View 1 (tube, rainbow, N blue to C red):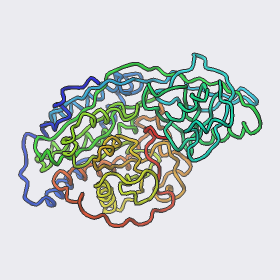
View 2: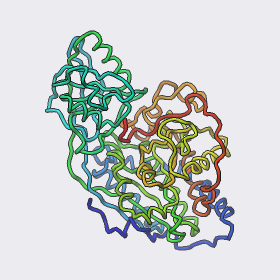
View 3: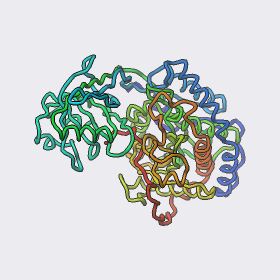
Length: 503
């Protein structure tokens, strides 16, 4: 990777938050409470909306998106960099090389016995079919807990020259399409195991073996039913532009504060190529930026160093955060007391999700590193103090906190949902419409300024502000026991963000 000098980002930065440091008392809890109240009061969705407007304008002037490696992302990063530098931060870029992707075609249609079109989404880093696609018979992989993950799954039928229809679950998308390719398949259509669209990545260009796309659960079940009646032929076209490009993270850090207790927060700044990405994830980026600016205006030097990051190439598989964490030495990783991630915090049909750091919900991937339970508890306590409901989200690591938990850094954060479908129980608690995606414009052109719920946006900006103010002075909660969690209401836990590599 082409990366700026190691001392620029891997080592703790000496970045300035304010030229007029305040005078802290010797009571961390008191200082934390004072600063957190101030930041919560002064950090608002109304003020952060101006950043959303700028990101929208950038996308409008740059082919409609802000994807990593594009002019839209470069302009977005420059905007963040400029504001932080003007506010008193010394800001650094971290450049890295990656394979830029852009969907050129994603089409699937049944040719026989009964012609119809089927919605499909190209997987990031998929190989391409020839222009115009291919016509081939469809064959379903028998379903079990690890459908399509092993060679034995493909022995019940002949997949040579066929399109493999594979249910999601049990292993990564990359492993599924690789196993299908080894069985002779010329393409793979992976259908969801839950409601909602399936948008995923194979993780890297070298992982792709055959053209691969994602289907909804409903479409997958319909095709399985069709196959029960006899042979099904489909027209399948998946094509993707892939080329080496350079992109950059933006990282800023306070001048004062103990570098051995670095508090870190991040959000990804890139969008997909299909739209401007205002909820995903200009919302998290704008909320983080507004709180960082308000911290600078507070003229207080925190006891603990506070570091902010705006990641690039998250949509390609968490590449920006991975590039950052990879450059850290063991000692530098040890200096990061915590990492909080904010991705999609203004979904129009959203739910207030808090990552389940202690696995108290008993669903999915298990707990995060030691301290993650306390981060979850602190966010929940803040929301409880404002009588705002919240629900657990499986701690999958499928957004930019993933690389941090892999190296043992306590992590957490919030979001308001992506392509998952809102349940009736969630609609009763949070309002909105049951049976509809949390964000109906997820990874689509309509993810624009009209795709933002200002109430969710404001709530999560307050969460960010409270966390920054609290942890800037007081990390004592990270070592306190966490109270036993009450049982979750039905439908209150949902799977993590869909950008990750697992199926």
